[in-house]
Length: 194
Image (cartoon, rainbow, N blue to C red):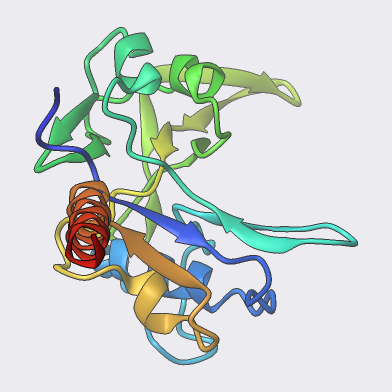
């Protein structure tokens, strides 16, 4: 049995109001090297969060990585850009080649392939150009983006930012221990009544 089950963030769709605060907080935490300001008009790159809000007529909630223990995305990555670090599945953006294998492998649709930015500028593909209007244009490098539980931040920005407490961190081992304690206490209470 795996004693190190990965934690993950879940959303309560009955509490989610669709405000996108989680997306903005996620983007700000993961883009400190992109000259991201914290006021309107100071953001110099597109807002690219590592979770995304889904709105339907009946449900609104963010979709996030479940940090699978047997992560299909990591298994499918041909360049080993996805690995497990501290019980979190993480993408190494420098290794990612944008092959889309992880997107196809993810059972939750929690990975996206989007342009890569560094220091507020698009990162260009090395030695790769495309033809456009009688000239060759540089192609922007794409990379896989997914929730990494704010591994470099110490706390999950989306949870902290949610004004309606719709997000929470699930720690499977803690929850299992809690259920075991409750079951043991119920058994003790039953025995005492006999």
